[in-house]
Length: 403
Figure (spheres, rainbow, N blue to C red):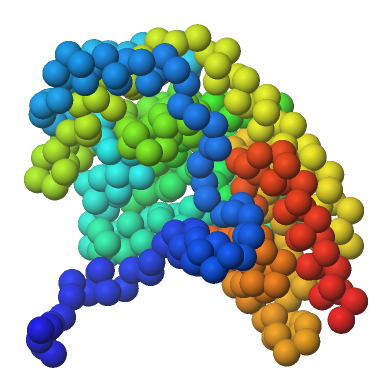
């Protein structure tokens, strides 16, 4: 029986649970009751993991490669990551600067915990991935939100960043392509951001590049490739999104050796190395023909174009065209502060609950992403599901407008 005197670490007590996981759980609950909810809330590709990756994992099992590995990951994988970073971005790392972890999410958390000290500020542009501020809270830091606007396609300017930096600023979190908006910073914008950071040499950059491979027309630029910024950049990436390996749990960070060693110390006392079989699969992913990845990206582009065109016809909905990832993030402020029947729709959470319970499509409210006027729609779903879901969303919003 739990004692009444139990108290938690205050940093943990201040953390909020993941909204995306909560929405996914609620949708599953409704499906168990026979309600045909279409889920557009999860952030994972709907494709199967490519065959070369699966074959490598099966071979690893048959060879008995099922024991602990080095904490940082097997050398073969870290060398492969170094080659990929050099080939893709022109940035040079050594294997000891690479730390492989159980997903890019863990890599982000390790970087924040290794760098962030009590009282430090971490600049997080909004809309942001739901876990960034909570990781900062767990580390004992303070999140300083940098708002963006739908008119600017959810990208902050160098001037806004310069104004947000204080002597307490320790870290800027940069996610491009962005979860949840799909925004991709253009090379010139990144150059301007880099120019600001060169004036503030006490600020590090956590560059979350997990959606690197899923870009459409704007080219991807790794922040570590910008002159003079590699030494202050913690590059985080992984295999979940580009290689359809979400359940395999494999990510990595690349950084200056003192940072990687500090993060490895934390990992060594918590989870230790990622799964040995998954690491072998990661080696195969890096070596396989990139045309397999491109086929998935081409499919995402078709889905993006369809869903964006459909939702752009909804009166009162403002939806930028994303340049990467697999999310739309429309502005839904026109539909807030309204009523439909007995329902009061004051927040994006209210709106998403209405769309799930009345129109049977699961989306994630912008409240969770620090953007209360938006909602995240994942188009990592079949075209048939997207067609039905688009009609349901349009009908649900039209019903509010007509109420």
